[in-house]
Every structure is written in structure tokens, then in C-alpha cells.
Length: 338
Ligand code: BGC
Image 1 (cartoon, protein in one colour):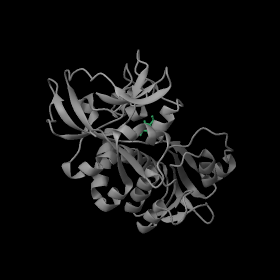
Image 2: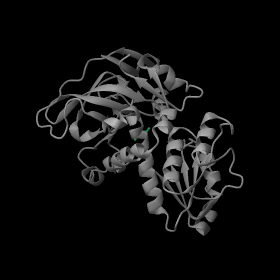
Image 3: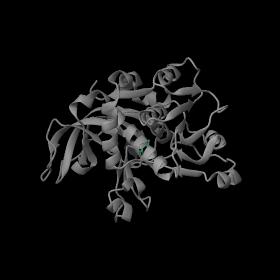
Image 4: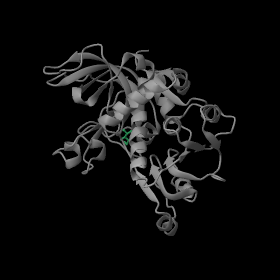
């Protein structure tokens, strides 16, 4: 089958032939991939900053924001039928199971011995066929078919949002989102839907597509932190420096959630944090419940808004997309079959 493979020995990323997965065995489901989105993590892996191929192999099939259709069922699978649209979760349990993985919260795995499809030790979905355990798949209602590729990134937001509200000991009203990429936009929409006052701070010009889109949906858009005050800050821009600067505009009891800040030497405003009862938390991945919440959230959004985020391209252009984000494109999605 055709697959976008990153070879860790030759350091090449290319669309190449790859053996079809074996199975489906007991409890497994074979899925035919329909499309797969590309994000900053794929770039990080392709630039060898993180990630690894499966044990004993030199190449990793990239892609973790996938949508597919059930193509064959292994023995003992119940609750799924061929033809069902599905989104696979990304992370797989550590073994032997830690307390969190045992509880179904592999997103909070305690050992760090988990694997992640398309990222860490397991092949991903920028390919034609994959086999997964039925438990690792989220059934998607057919009316969400055109936007199901957003379920995985939206699940990350659901987890971050739940965490922020759980950590905030007061009655937060205002949210500052750092970054206007797909995660930033989804985070802003989520906060707006929950009745919060939302400011998005990002580099794009005030009249850029992203800024205009956010303003149209009720967010305030700014290119600096001047005059901004917030109870909750969601970092989705990759900059630890900006995240630390945003702590300076956080109200008392404020919560900062880090989603993508890259390692950096930053100054921790410890005294202000203590005086302000501030909280900083990191959040990664998402649980099955968060995937379910993401499906419900996406179904509640205007289809035109969602369509405005996506730009579909053939699989043959995926390597290019990963290395060079396309100007004007908010979320690049690669169709698998052409
Ligand atoms: C994915 C997560 C994953 C994380 C770290 C993100 O892009 O959405 O599911 O856990 O990368 O590998």
C-alpha cells in the first residue's frame, strides 16, 4: 500500500510502498483510511525532534489526525460494523499497565512507556490501511463525515478546557488564547461557546483570514498583550516566552495551560505567581471521553465555520505540507485515495 514513511536511518520522508498490516486478529478492526490532517507534531517528528519508528523497523508511517471507514472485523468485535466511519485515538497503553492506563486514562500515563500512532513507536495513518483494536476507535456519526478529521485536535482542546476549569478555584470569565492555528481557533470557539470573553493574541495581521474569522465569531484579536487581562490562558502558539509574558496579564487565581510551548529558558515570575495564586499546567493527548466531547462539540458548530478551516490536498503532497506550512491554509488535510 502507499504510505508516507519517515526513515530514521536514511533521514528521508517519502511516499513509498509499505506492506499492508496483518489481520484483523481477535478484537481487531481493519480500517480503510479516508483522510488525515497534518499538525506541528508531524513536523517535529519529521525533523527528528521527537518520535521513533516501531521496534525493529527503521521507518515510521506518519499521521495521527485520521478518519477511516471500517473495512473488516476480526473475531469477537461487537459494536462496530463494516462501513462505519471511525476516528482512531492516538495513544496506546503502557505495559504492564500503570494505574492511569488501567483506569482508561492513557493520556495521563504514569510511566511514559506508552506508544502513539504516527508519532512514537507505532505506524500512523498517512497510508491506505490500518488495523486497530476496536476499543481504540471512536464511531463517528455520518453527518460529521466532512469534519471528522478535526475530532482528534478538538479532543486535545476538550481535555485542556476541562483541566483549566477544574484548576481555576474562582469564577473565570475571560480567556486568552495564544496562537491562531487550528488548535488556537478551536480553543477560542470552545471558550466562546461556553460564554467566555475571548481574546486571541497571535502574529498574523489584523486583516488576515484567521484574525477576521476569529473576530467574526465574537473573539477579540490582538497582536500583543497590551491591555489584555485574562482568567485562563491557553497556549497554542509554541512559544514558552509568550506564555510566560501572558502570566503577567493573568488575573488572580489565573490558570495557564501549556499545549505546544517548545523548550526554552524562560524566567519564572515566582513571586507574582505566589501573590496571584497562579497555576501553570501542561496538557497532552486526550481520553475516550474527550473524543466523545469533541464529537458533540463539532456537531454543534456551524458547518460553514468548520469548512472554512479545512484545505484538502492529495496524499502525494503530504511530505511538502509537513515541512512547509501553506500560506493561507488553516488545517491541511490529505485525502488518502487520490
Ligand atoms: C497529538 C497528541 C499527542 C501529542 C504528543 C499531538 O499532536 O494530538 O495526541 O499525544 O501530539 O505526541
